[in-house]
Image (spheres, helix red, strand yellow):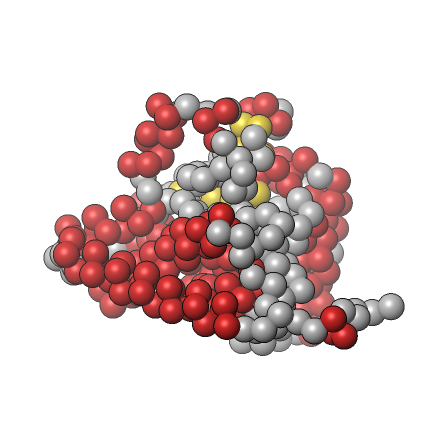
Length: 333
C-alpha cells in the first residue's frame, strides 16, 4: 500500500487561490445538486433509482481537473451525476434527464444511471456494477491505437472488484499495455455490505497489483492531494503507456440509493470521523485558514449556487416529455 508522500504535500500547497475557489464552487454545486435531486425524487418527478455522489466530490473534481478532455475519455459507473457536472454538462440538462424529458443529456431515455455526452468525452454511466470496466478497457486500447496520447479514466466502486469483468479487464489492460486509469472510489460499502465482509483483501490496491500494474491508494477527501496524485498518475500513464489502478479512500454520506437506510448497517459513531473529514469542510477550512475566503463568503457562494440550481430544476421541468414515436430512435435493432 502506498501513501501520500511529502512531495505531494508540496504540490498540494501550489494551487492558486482562484483555483481553490473554483474547486469549492464545483464541489458545492455537486452536493447541492444532489440535495435538490433527492427532493424532486421524493416529489415524484424522478422514477427508477437515485444514487447520490455526496461525500465523494473531491475524487471527481480532482481527477477530472487533471484530465485533458480534448483527447481523454471517461467511462463511469451509476453514481454519475457529479462527474457529469464536472465535465461541463449543464445542470438543467442533467435534471431534465432525471425527469425523463427530451431536453435531457440522453434525450430523457437514460435516466439517472445512463448519462452520456460524446461532445464532453463522457461515455456514459452504467447501471450494471462493474459494467463499464470492460468498455473503458476497450476505449483505452482504441486510444492507444489512435496514437494521439489520450487515456481513459474509468470510475467504479469497491463492490465492482468482485465481478469477473474487473479481473478479466485488468489482466488484458496489463497484457496489452493499455493507457487507462482505473479509479476505484472506495466508499467503504458495496450497497449495504461493508468492505471487510465482501472482500478478502481490504487493501484493494493489493487485488489489482496481482495483474502486474502500478497501484496507488490516495486520500479521496482532500482535493489538493487528489489533484496532485491525478496529475502525476496521468503523466506516468501517458509516458509509459501502461495502466494504473487507484484506490481513492472516501465515504458515502447517503445510503447506497435513495431508499437505503444506512443506519441498518453502520452506526453514527462510525460516521463521525468521516463527517469531520467532509471534502467540502476540509477545503472550506483551508480557504479560511489561508485568508482566501471568509465563512460568510462561502455561505454566500452556497446560496448563490442553490439559486442557480433551483432555476435549472424549473428549466428542466419545462422540457417536454419525449414523443412515443421517438421510442426506437437512437436504438440499433
